[in-house]
Length: 168
Image: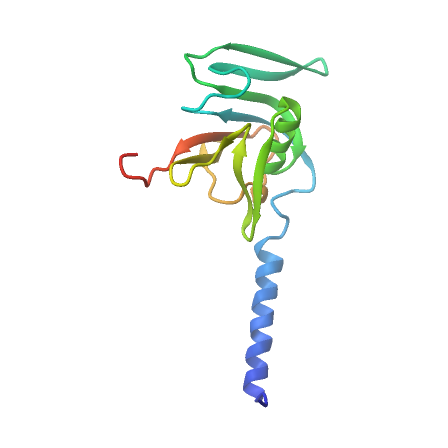
């Protein structure tokens, strides 16, 4: 099969479009190139955390050392990592909290970014509930490694029911 000049032009245009999407669609992978200090919260909702179940547990840096305070929270497990420093995206914050809190997490690296499907042994359900995250109280609609954050931001991971399920 012989390519016509029109076919060659169309192929070049297609290559240019794909290159523009790759270069400009994901320019920094959600990082500003610096480190940030923010607060990360993990809200287990109806699930129980594997450590400090049913408590509000806070990791805080005091005089250069991390301290942990845990108080009963009516059976609702919430972990808060105050002023945690990491690369400047939501995934980096979660990794830093995982290292500090000594809990495992699992992610899937997908075409559109990193998808978190397990935090501290609490696995997404299909269908059902899953890990979602918010930045400064606003639902994040991008992969966590693609959302850049700045100093002082509040990143909150919540294990929540799928709002599109019947009865949810």
